[in-house]
Length: 101
Image 1 (cartoon, one colour):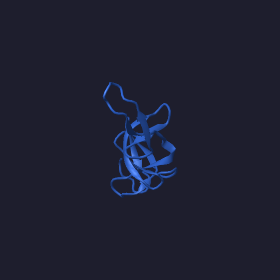
Image 2 (image 1 turned 90 degrees about the horizontal axis):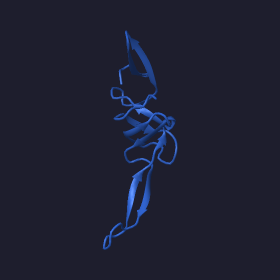
Image 3 (image 1 turned 90 degrees about the vertical axis):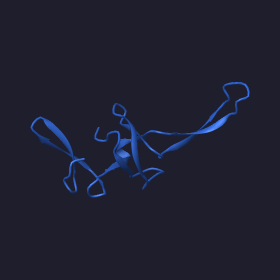
Image 4 (image 1 turned 135 degrees about the vertical axis):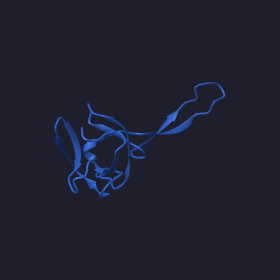
């Protein structure tokens, strides 16, 4: 999976199309990612102890990694990611400007 924790991504499809945020967590086996402030759902929780009030909690939901594009730090655009191999190491590269991600 090309998208990693800490990347800034732009949503390209779905209800949050056009928004951007930072990747909080990635699930490579399921091809899902959690993005900060995107795909937020409300969950109602019951009181656990006597005298405690119930509340509504906002929780982020995971989205498919195919619905996002990484934002390059050098050209500030949503880009596709390529790979560059130098010796034994692999680098993620911006397809537009060629900078390392």
